Image (cartoon, rainbow, N blue to C red; front, side):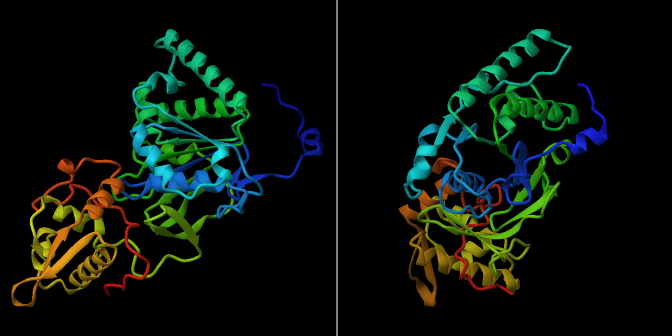
Length: 366
C-alpha cells in the first residue's frame, strides 16, 4: 500500500459511479439482505437473481442484464431446482449459474483466521484463488450467496464474533477483486425482534448496503448511498415478487397479524377443525376481536386459494380441513420441511410463518 498526494489523486479522471442497485450499491460492493426465518428469503433471492439477469429494467435499478451465479448453502438440490422451475422461463435463465454446496462445504471454505493455523490459512487462500478463477472463467458479474451462515461454520468462524465476521467479509472483498465481480449479495437471518442480522454488530458495519426483508417490505438498515424502501407483493402461483412504492394495507407485520402458515400448520394433523378450534389452537382469546377478524380473513383467503377445504358443520359452524394443495404449499413455504415435522394443533409450527403469504386484498383486521 502506497499513498499518493491528495491533489494528484483528486485530479485523476474517473469514470462515473455505476450502480448495481440504483444509488445504493455501487459496482464492487457487498449487499447483505437480512430476513427472519420463514419470511420468504429464498423467494426474494430467486427473484433478485431473475431481476439482475433479465433484459427488462430491474425493480432495483441497474441498466443492463448481468451474468449471475448463485451459491445456495441451505436448500436440497432438487427442491431448489423445483423452486426455479416454477418461475417464468426466459433468456434470463441463460445468464444464471447455480451451485448447491450442501455436503460440499470444503468448496466454500475460503476464509480462515491466523496465525493459529497457517495451514488452514493457506488452504483457505488456495480455495479463494480457485473460486475466483472459476468465477472469472465463467464470466460471472454478480455472485449471490444464500445464506452466509453455513459458509461461516465451514470456515470455523462464528456469526457472534466481530473478528470472525470481519474475517469473512475480508475474504469476500478479496473474492470480488480477484474474480472481477461487480457485486456480491448475501443473506443472513435476522436477530430476534430486530431488523439487523443475527449475531455480531460487524454484520451492520461490513457491507456497503444492508437491507431488511420481512416478507412485505424491503427496507434499508445501513447504506453509504440512497435509501431503499418498497412494498412487496407475492404471487404464490408463479413465485414472482413485485416491488411497489407502498406496503399493501392490512398485510404489514404486527402483533395483531395472523399468518396463513400458522393456520395451515394447525390443520396438518389431518383432523377436522372448527374455526373456533383453530382460534384456540393459535391462542387467540374469545374476546380478542382484532385477531379473530384477522383469523377469519386468513381462513377465507386460504379457502379461496384452495389450501383449506370448508364444509358445513353442526349449528351453522364450518369444518376446515387441509387440502393436498395446502400441504404442498406449506412445505414449500417452510423450505421443504417434511409433513411429519410441520407440527400439530398443540404446537402449530414452533416458529412464525412467512409474512408474505396473504393476498394483498385481505382486509385489514382493525
